[in-house]
Length: 246
Image (cartoon, rainbow, N blue to C red; front, side, top):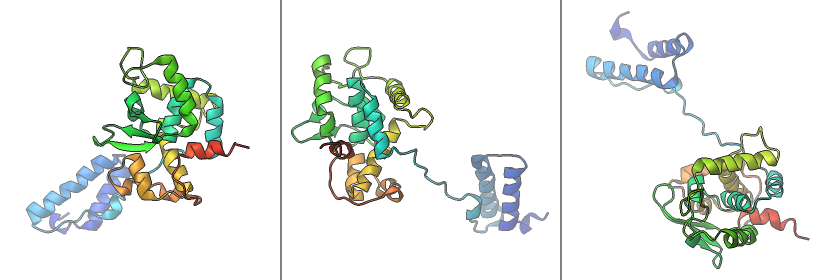
């Protein structure tokens, strides 16, 4: 074939051949497609645009989200005070796993009912909600352990828990609650926090700040999960537990 006759149709056929016949992955196919860019620009001296239909934008898929009933089921199943505190902060404050791991005693402000997240993702400090529901558990835990710096220490004194230990704890709690095959993780709790706040009618900009997102686009992925509007900026954990009050 005459190289000068290569156009978009030929490129699409070739890339589809790499995908279907040679079973090459997305990245290798993209590298092959980019080689045509060099050919066009530096050999043919023509503009080149990668055909968009070859590589449609990847969909941002959220992990599974806990329903409010499942959240109640989880907290009813977890009896260990330390584990209840950690689960409560992952869900009720929307903390990332590493933020929970590095959370310091001094970051808990029970007077203002807020938590200072120091140097979160992107090296940014922020404030998020301290759920009233877990205050008693937090106080009981602290009285029993008297940690000095990090709220949740590992086996080594004065050192934070390892991420894998927290992840394993969440997995075990999910198993006890009956969610073994759901694929729920620590990050699921954070996603559920954001989704349930949207359900309460909290505006997207407030949720962005609570989650510590740099760009609003990152927070916007939760919008399609919104189900109802009830405006009140309180932790979704408190909303659920208050519903049990007579």
